[in-house]
Figure 1 (cartoon, helix red, strand yellow):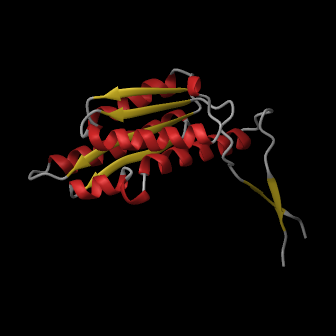
Figure 2 (figure 1 turned 30 degrees about the horizontal axis):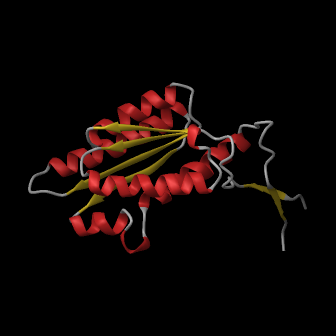
Length: 172
């Protein structure tokens, strides 16, 4: 029987360029997400000069800045970082839904991976826990996902610079 090949992304960041779009709203938690994302990317071999951070007013503006970065041709992947905390009105629901939808549209329209690190929290305590408290950092996780997807897409698209780690999968 024929072998089935499995192609994986890998986590080598050497030579990859990243754009991070981060909200200024709820900055005390967003800064923790940025720290986590930078720690991840730099730790995986991405050069400092290959990372650009764009700050936007809030979560609503994240998709537009992602779209601009994606179409610039200067990045291999993006990371979206923000924190939205539920208040007393429906504003939370609209912002979260449209931010998520906008980020998805950027990925679909450009073919670039976007690591999703926009927290949608019920409380400030949840935001603190997910932005670096208790050892959890969703910024780091979003950057890791973007890096893995950038490598996977490079391999799937047949980039000469990225020989795919392929594992044969046979029948048992």
